[in-house]
Length: 125
Image (tube, rainbow, N blue to C red; front, side, top):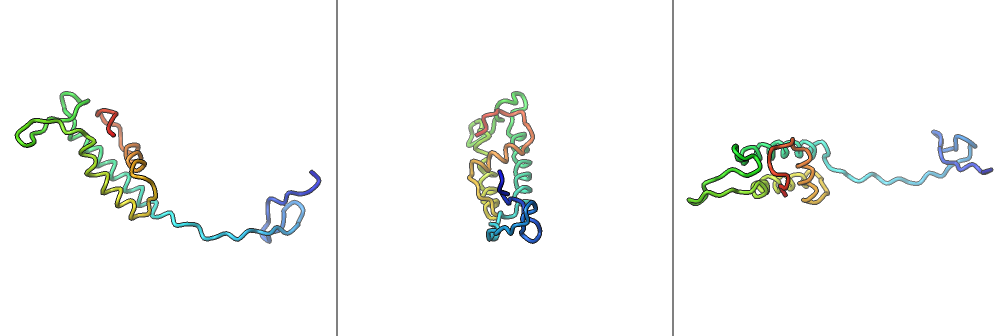
């Protein structure tokens, strides 16, 4: 290559190798990414609430199953995923208000990834 590719400009927009002026493209203002620290704090608090809810809903004698509950005069096991909807959807709405642009499915994945491991079934979704 005999010709300089003029890739790296100096402070005056001249090539650092050959000194030729480089026409720099106009750069628009970057898009708003939202309140990233606020979204991270929301993920962490939702994950902590999620972990506490799993612990409360887990049967102490059989950690792989939900706890028996008395509902309408019947003992039933309420699956973890039914209880999680109560915390995940409001936190997703709050995240959207903070500027989160992802889907609800990705939000739940991030909350599950941030939560500490629990003794519950791995098929929580």
